[in-house]
Image 1 (cartoon, helix red, strand yellow):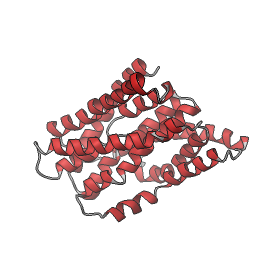
Image 2: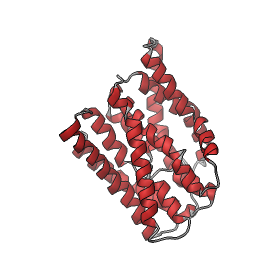
Image 3: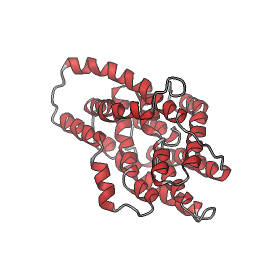
Image 4: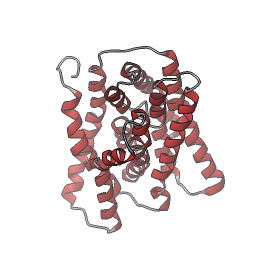
Length: 283
């Protein structure tokens, strides 16, 4: 569609951002049985995101002394948890699992619009500007609304529940489609083996290892989480590099060609990597 029909990402993205994503998040949260373990997930994923961002900023400093290390740092702390991961969560999990996954990715959303955004902007934007960007995200209000409805036990009409079955199906298709349309619109690719290697190290090695560490610590010492939370965290750790990295790299003019190539290759790798890992650790 992107290559031969001429559909642009900007044609689909606003529909997803302002309609489908908030509805899916709101529905996921209102149907989740909340407890302290689930509410803690955004804090855990935010800490992991920030930690990996700062770690890979330091590591990449041994290879680059320019803004490339800022791009690596941003990439290390996030992933395509929304347009790639959420459709998979809708397919793999029940209502409780969907809500848990949504709560978990909130930490990455906050990271992208705080430390991650500041890192890629190289200090061009103030903390106030980062907060301003965060509070304009429709997904934040959908999540807060879902939490209020859930905690107050506001009854949800059956017609909304039936409506959301169609919305989730459409989101699954459009979420994957927006990635393909975005890739189809990329004009320049630049193979930088070092950049691809270090971003893949962060996304496909460091993220799964850290999540595995969290899960194993919980299994052997804390017993705070259940199997559904483990599965949601595993899926979150497996997604490819975030497509938003290309958008921010283009806006800031920080090697968008390198970012585009890395995101494309990580998405291709994920076609094999994710089904293999899901079959081993989730199904």
